[in-house]
Image 1 (tube, rainbow, N blue to C red):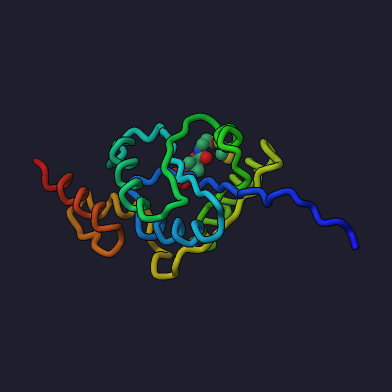
Image 2: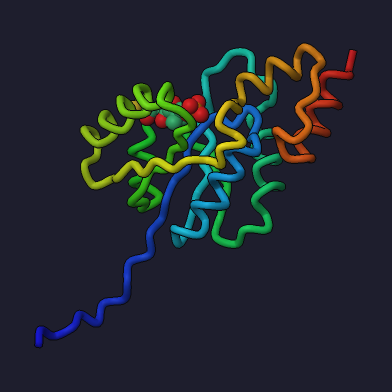
Length: 170
Ligand code: PNS
């Protein structure tokens, strides 16, 4: 019988990158699912060049921290530059992305293959959010919010409250 390796199992660190402007219930659903699969999950907010975000980076980080604080192996961070460089610094093995519908696939495939070209050791893992959220996106939440519509049930309550405070301000 071959000798069994006594090396401890490697802890798998996954990175869930995105803009999260704002975090939606679809994101949160994926984070909860992934937190059960990976040893550590880093939700990594891109310090992004989007000129007109609804929420500042600080606000987005705060909201993410509020919604993940009950998940012990999940942390929130920010990054700039190439995602693969950030993943290397965090010693991550996995990049996590959500796919809602076939329409997401082409863009995600391009990104995943480019990231693989840049860093072959890093695996992109796609997960599906609950189908109830398959139409949900931060972009639509922003649009509905800016036009005064309700986003109840689409975003966590803390995010809903912040949206209400933001759009009711003159
Ligand atoms: O939530 P988003 O906006 O769809 O997330 C896009 C994100 C942050 C994953 C992507 O823009 C990204 O990874 N940007 C970092 C710069 C980078 O590495 N670009 C090459 C990716 S192939």
